[in-house]
Image 1 (cartoon, rainbow, N blue to C red):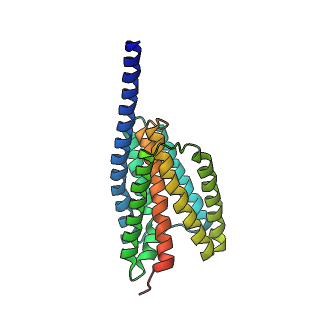
Image 2: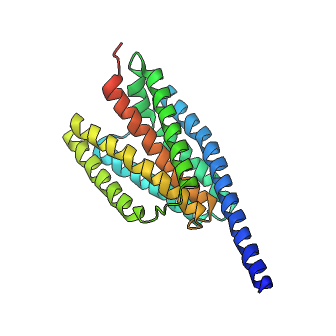
Image 3: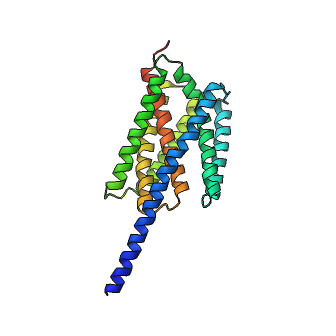
Amino acid sequence: MNQNMQQTYDISGGMRQVRHRVLRNTYWLLALSMIPTILGAVVGVQMHLPMLRGGLGFLVFMAIAFGFMFAIEKTKNSGIGVAVLLGFTFFMGLMLTPILTHTLGYANGGALIMTAFGGTASILAVMATIATVSKRDFSAMGKWLFAGVLVLILASVANIFLGLSSLQIVVSLMAVAIFSAYILYDVQQIINGGETNYISATLRIYLDVYNIFTSLLSLLGMGGGNRN
């Protein structure tokens, strides 16, 4: 009886160690992924890289992004996966060029960017902490969050053609709420053993953070941007 209890304890302890290691590596890789993202953003803004706009631009972006994500999933069990992920984050940094250029056109553009960055970091810290300490199971949120993302995509595509400021505000507010909840869901997936690969986990949380940042920056620009 005691031997069985010891074996159970050892297995449980080993699983906790694995989950802790995955979570730790995820946070480290997430922090590292910010470097190529910032580098890509700086390159894009400084070089005034032209970006495809409208429906064609959206399709090209989605094709490249999903190509990267497919490659990341295929290589996630090797060091190549880290390199592909960092390449993806550089690409996503480049994709920030339009919104950063637009925001920097405001007299307080730099302050708006730092505010969005600080707000994103705060949301990440709060949601990750709740996911870590809460005893509540958030796994049931997955299907609803996925449905919410589909609605966001459809609304975003529609607004490419409609160009409604009011719809953009609604989409941005929904995105902040949905991807904040996704951080809660994704971090708890690691803690509960639902995600055991730190590269895949980093990709998911990175996308959550990226979407929160761009949505906050869009809202701040529309609500607090001061023209020169």
